[in-house]
Image (cartoon, rainbow, N blue to C red; front, side, top):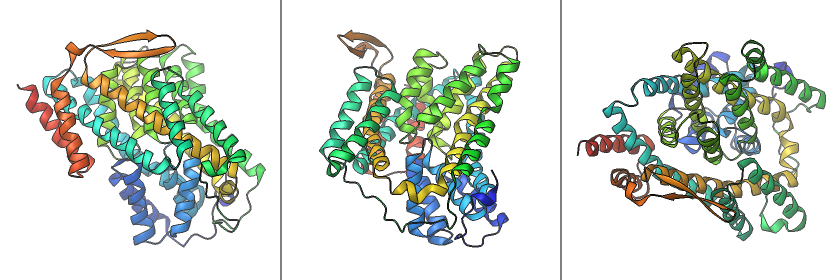
Length: 444
């Protein structure tokens, strides 16, 4: 895993201290989800400092879309790698994650200690109602970017039906979408409107090697699983930390299409299968993640904290919560370094694989249906206090009890939608106003 084996010689000469300073600034200001984070990096690193040229930035972003995990963090890792090899990549990726992780840990502790206090509950009423508008906005943004033809629109609809009505597992939906994308690429490529990169689009002067890639994968795989081995030896395979690490490690492999795409699967498992959090707490956690810098997938840390907090043996609840949060963050983000350091040197070859581009285009289309499923799931759990599962043939429906309708959440969600869509307000402003409305309406 030597830095010299992966550094790109075309990068401009930037001091390591300046790299640290700039990425620390980006990490503390990276609000607004992946779109806002990528725009911030583009302004700081392409427009203002010209550390990366426009073409290289966009090609790297395309590579990051091919990899599981948060693409904005992977892009920061790649830019750091381009500047100063593996050490620079670590700085870029870590500083993108650590500020938000520390804030999220503090908010998780506050939530566990004070979630039932009336004022805190009122604030979260507003925040989670506002999240509805934000998730719907994400559906529309991704749909506008991803759905370029009839095939992709049909695929998005089928993905939604498979998840919402048939309760299909998320990895199966992603896998089928990828397979269909490969088939369509070979038989009807015009359906996906692919734009494969030309042969001359390179950024690295060094030819990648299979041996170097295998070494990187093995080395970072060992780093990824080292805490899991320690847990297995010290606490055994039945301890909650082992289950937390195993679940979020698997999640790190299937997180294509951004955090919104995998949240429905995460919620399904964490709420229904594992029982770590309730549906209400899942919505609260997403609201917290929306208010912090860094990747939205940081909501996993919130779930890991509460899972540890509620099964503390042999430690105290606080110690176990912090261990659960730390382990979740580790197994969520360490794989991102593995993907980037292993595959960044192969960027030009990956860009020219039409079958891989076709699989990605189909996965992205399927992700629209996945996010739509998430938005409906959140709407039902936020607007109604009681939901009853109903089986209709092969379909599994969540049927709301109309008498449990929460008019306050509906009103706040409507105001948030106006702020987001009509008045184009930012996420922090929208969440702040919604939290204030939550407090005000709770006094009525």
